[in-house]
Figure 1 (cartoon, rainbow, N blue to C red):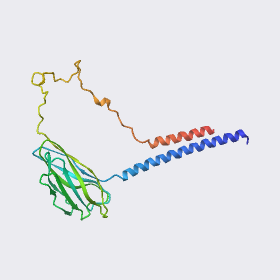
Figure 2: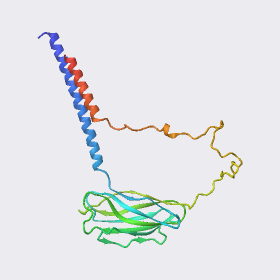
Figure 3: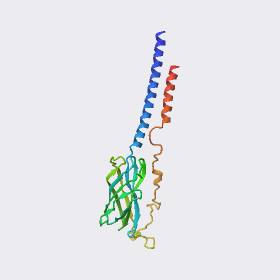
Length: 248
């Protein structure tokens, strides 16, 4: 074998090895991305969520307290609910689903600011892997127009195997309507002028409508995210094909 032939063979072999190395690296990256996605899905933390509600100042609304996931079941719980401003809305009552065989009478403060709830699943109704588990139903009474948060504090949650469960929390919003909109300071007085004598039409200096279409300026985010596995495989195929062409 001549020196030139040996040099060409070595070059072809090096190109082939580089192509294989790049292909293996791409496959390893693809596997890492898939593993990360699986780990994220498996590690989603159970959350105690308070649903939103809307009422009038003299009315009531019913909201739920829900555990999103019970991966190891639920033996029992003890939690506290708090309204940030009882002058807008107050906790009026609370009740438990029938599935809990042992419950404590809800303890609600006189001003309706807080409530303490406690229940045990003695019959094993909440099995491991259960989702959207209703813990309690709460009645909130409106007092004055406005919005307040109804927050939840998990004091103790136990799984079926006796282990402690530490869920995240998500507060609900209670909206109390105002019973009618107040007149605007720039309300039309009947002759097309506002209270301060200026024209209330929303026009610019040249008479053109000043309304703008914000939809046109919204940047679409469709397509964002990790590379498609198909694109990775296509890239690998192109690299291998390049190495083969060099060899020929």
